[in-house]
Structures are given as structure tokens and as C-alpha cells.
Image (cartoon, rainbow, N blue to C red):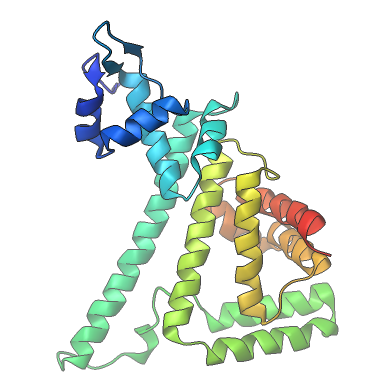
Length: 265
């Protein structure tokens, strides 16, 4: 078995140099109890061992996901926190993002080559990576009408009309926001944060606004909670979220239900 080996007793300056985290920030983490050193020498120096460096790695991963320090502390100190599971979730999220960004880079390269006269423009590939498939969209619409009745059709048509009027830059921004929310949710799920925790509910406020941007109207209590149930009950949506992280569809559904109950009239 491969183990992470660290020279015992790294000073705060050495940890700062290794991690890129400033000495001042490490001192602050110590003061607030987020990252305590393994020991403090008679000379007053802080010394860090392997466990502290791995905890710092988790702090940095969760900080990348937008978690505030107090919530990071609660996640890492929770009795059910599993460092290995958290790392696997981080890896899955990054791998999915890497694959998507790779496709977007290929789309950019192909478009640039066409614009510079190196090849013919292929209209079928200029939106590769933006995750919109007309056939899948039509199937989703049919399932929504079947589930909610013909009354859902005007809302679907309004959403599609808004989509047609949305610029490519706005679409990319919305996709980036979706990726950021999902990444933070994956981190929260892996870290054992309850769906009703403050950090997850802050993400649901962003989720509510994100859905509203697509719908052209902010979701009501019933519609937002109902959308969360759709993520669990609809096979395509369920598979999509489970491909991001096991248990994510149910986690998101519960988080949306709690937000609807607490925040929406």
C-alpha cells in the first residue's frame, strides 16, 4: 500500500512554502481551530505532521468549492467524515470537469481553425460541450407534460423562447454557475454536511436563482420542491446526477425541499 510520507515536524514556514498558503493564514487557521499544529515547540514554533497536511489539503479543496471556514470546520470535524470518500468525490468532480473543458477547448480550436481558413466550418460541432441536445430536450418536454399535464406546456415554451434569446456568453455563464453549484454539493455530500445545513441551503439559494433564470420566473414553493422530486423520479435526471456523484439526486431533492419549506411562500 502506498502511503503519503511527510517529514515529521514541518514548521509553519515550510508548510506555507509547500502549500502556497501564507504563514499569516496558517496562523489564523490555528487561532480559529480549523487547523491546529501537531505540536508547539519550546521555542514557540508550530510543527505540522502528515495528518495536519492532509487536513490542510481538504481545507483547500473545500475552499475551492466556496465553503466558508466555519462550515469547512463542521464538515471536517463531523463524526461521519471520510477522508478517502471525500478525495474520491473531489476526483470524480474534477475528472468530469476536465472532460467537459477538454471538449470545449476542442470546440474553440475547431472554430478558430475554421475562422482562420484552415478548414470548413462544421455547424454540427460548433456547440459541442455546451450540453444541449435537441432530441433529448424534446424527450424531456414530453416527460414533463406527461408528469404535470398540458398546463406545463406554456412554461416549457416560455423557457425555450428565453433560451433562444440568450447569448452564448450568458449560456456559458449559466453552465459555469451550474458546475460550481454541483461541485460544491458534491463536496458537501462527501463531507457529510446535512442537506439542511447552512452551507447547503446557501447553495440552494443559488440553485433557486439559477432555475429562475432558465424559467423566466422564480420558482414557487411547490414548483421548486416538485423539480427536486423530478431529479429523483425522472430516469434521465436521476442518472445524470448519479453520474456526478452517488446519492446526489436524493441529496439535491432533499436540499431543495428544505429550501422551499423555509424560504418560499
